[in-house]
Image (cartoon, rainbow, N blue to C red):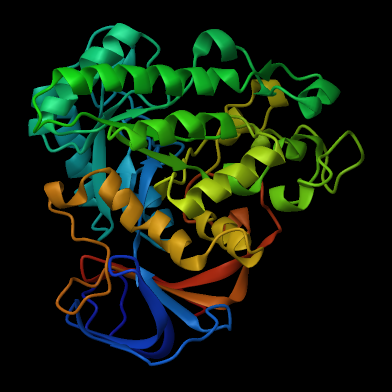
Amino acid sequence: MTDGLTPGAILAELAIEDAWLVDPASGRSGIGAIRVADGEIVEVAWAPGRADPADGRVIVAPAFLDLHAHLREPGGEEAEGFATGLAAAARGGFGAVLAMPDTRPPLDRPEVVQRAGAAAAATGSPVRTLLAAALTVGREGKVLGPLASLAGAGVVALTDLPAATADPALLRAALTEAGALGLPVILHPDEPSLSAGSEASEGLPATILGLRGATPAAEVAAVSRAVALLRQVSAEMPPDVRPHLHLSGISVAGALEPIRAARNDGLRVTCDVFPHHLALHDGWLGGDRRWAWEAAAAPWSGGPGEAPPYDPMTRLDPPLRGPEDAIALLAALEDGTIDAIATQHAPARAVEKELPFGEAVPGIAGLETTLGIVLEAVDAGRLGLARAIRALSLGPWRAIDGARHGLPEPALRVGAEASIVVIDRAERVLVDRSVLRSRARNVPFQGRALPGRVLLTTARGRIAWLDPEG
């Protein structure tokens, strides 16, 4: 299959025949062959006829792009840094990641952005590091940062993630200025007055476990308010300026309707969902380890589970919701309401995570498990493979206006740079925290075998990940 495969080097030669090719740019998938020479795709040949993509063939697709990764550098390298975070991304099939600005210091000044970019480049990883800058000074949600200067420093988005932007006047001003700059505002949709102090999502599992519940209305209210502000700002801008709101981490079914309504009215709204909100549910807090589609007919109601309750690895933000929400999100992903799947890679130190449930910081180190979780949904018939690949590659690229920032379109196209992922669809990978490339170990899937082994990830024509067992 390969020749000259050395991690970090230009992909000198790659030839794969009888593979299942998925090209979201053309909308085509099927059996075919692909050849790469000197870091460039030189041949893509599609076989005639139709076949079942789940027949064990190797999958070849564009490398993924993650819209939501907390890489912690500068200032948080004890949890993660660019070197380990990009290595984890490559192992997960990602050829590019958008790093969030919640660093120490935050990415709220051009000189800090430039230092972060230089640190990422110094790793030598071919995985592209895209940077989001802080929307407000210090990420404090009080005063807008120097957005024009930050745009000039090369950021591709503006956000205060993981904090919510709760001040409506501030969000309106941000949408106006960012719209004029051609940058999306990424929002964590939450109304803190309804969710502050919560440990779980409001519902029967939270009640049984005695956990403080956050009402789903906190997310719905935040989405509705943001859409209303976008509507007003869009009406005030010149016709050739379209302010762009991106909602990251949709987790409840009720948030989908205002998004659909905004799209129908021509507003520029994009959104993503995290894999854990597609496949997990709030019963996991009680030790239930069924997937959401397995639990939908009989949600967890207090019985013994396969795992002990109160696992701090299952404390997330947004919290895990009911299985009915996960089913609705999968359907919205399939019909295109949701544009992208983002990892919400949130590495944490053991001293921050291995605590009583209510004291643990929320988050999953998700770059290396996202593909497997998504393929579980594909195997269950809840999500098409082509749609899943699109949501991991072309959807994110479009959500951040990739072409505007000089990012090649995720495609299997002759003449394009080889930024691809090769997946052994027949294999399952045992989640083992001890072998993760991420420095963090906060994953709730320890000991679970997930479908799909990433054999090879290339980015910018170079080898980013080569499975030593492949």
